[in-house]
Amino acid sequence: MNWLKLENENQLETIKSNSFDTNIKGVVLFKHSTRCSISHMALSRFERNWNFSEQELPAYYLDLLNHRNISNQIADEFQVEHQSPQVLVIKDGKCIYTASHSDIIVSDIEQLFNN
Image (cartoon, rainbow, N blue to C red; front, top):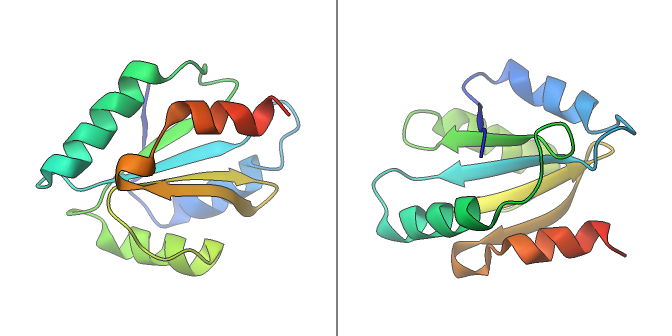
């Protein structure tokens, strides 16, 4: 899996803008706490089951410990409650899917695009 690092608040505007691109399914944001064993488990399972290319569904990785301000901005921008770990799918400027902890399942994201 080829993660794009989310390390700058300005990237959120780019992510939101890119989510309107009809050539991609959406944009994924994965918020990860590097000190949390549950977050490590969710990230590992997510990476093992990921079946999308970067061109099809770009995926951004956010290190929450180093960039909590970006996580707060995500919560405000996309009207979601902060969780850790958490995955969001952004399409057309809106969060169309969010899950946290053991509910982070790649097949649920696959189903979003198979209907």
